[in-house]
Amino acid sequence: MDRQQKSESTVDADEVAHFSRLSEQWWDARGPLKALHKFNPVRVGYVRERAAKRFGRDPASADCLVGLRILDIGCGGGILSEPVARLGAAVIGVDPAQSNIAVAQHHAAREGLAIDYRCATAEALAAAGETFDVVLAMEVVEHVADVDLFVELAVAMVKPGGLIFLATFNRTLKSLALGILAAEYVLRWVPRGTHQWRKFITPEELTIMVERNRARIIDRAGVSYKIHTHRWRLSDDLDINYMLAAQKAA
Image (cartoon, rainbow, N blue to C red; front, side, top):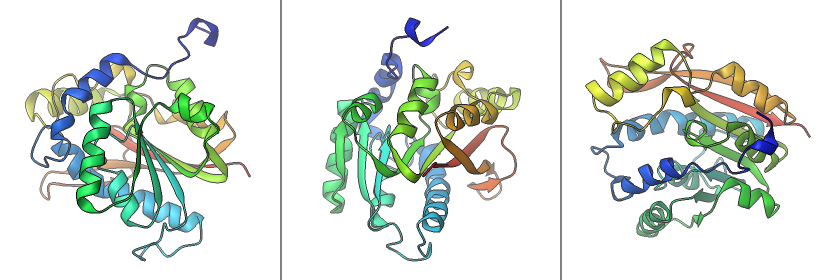
């Protein structure tokens, strides 16, 4: 199906409604988003290490991202935006659900963090000509209506030489069994209906989309959950969760 037949929108109204219903529980580490809270330190560390390396910073420094303008697309209640802001970055968090933005603004104010939260879409920011040193699209691509268009817009907002990070689910039988059936129906780590297997995307498919928009993959990593430690960690296994880092051409 070519682009002319598509909606020219990345927003999936059903997905927005689903996460809007969870808005008051974003910061409940034992609530329906507890899996995301457990996963968060791994993705923050991944962004911190690779962004610091790209921009010549010490990743061990508490302000290693100072001076960088970072966009968090699909920020929800701000679970990722806040730790990135604490590392010194000027963070812009956007989400199409107004209820999520309200929660994010309230929590950031309570924590004394100056984060620019906006109820907006990727296409609106791209149309306004916004650009960033780093764009974060973490656990987002599996929830958008048009992945090709979303990646195109996200990469377009990266400054030349800047970075984009993407985290999502691979479309494998293992991700169906563990990422949906086990996580949503057996362990109940996330609410039922949070993910749709047909919307998962393979690393190879996502790489093609990123690279056709003048960015090259500089790193990719799997993320695995270790039951005996109850922690997520980076791994070489990309069969379920994975993250990609790409640098835009200068």
